[in-house]
Image (tube, rainbow, N blue to C red; front, side, top):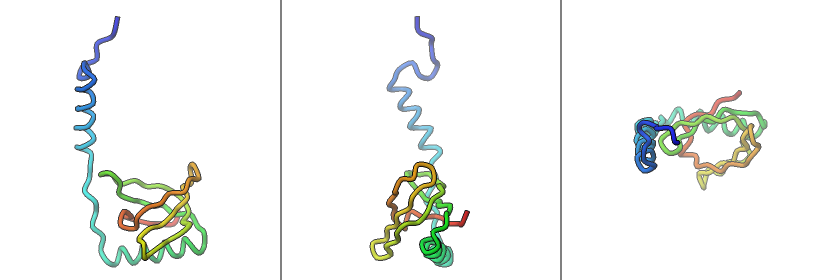
Length: 105
């Protein structure tokens, strides 16, 4: 005998409810000022040369995500940068336009 689960009696209904909840928690991408972008640029360059760890806050799929890692490469012409996250030590490529904030640990 299966236990009855309210609000999830049909798998389609459960998927629809999950999508609605995720959509409600989305936030718009923050607009950065020139001063904030310049400060982030200086922090990225310093972190790249000194190999210090930084907190990276970026926007992805409607959410602001913060990770800790080291900057490995910055391509200002291609608007990309590569960082190695602290948890799994994986290389992540990201666009500079997705960055919201960069701070030293």
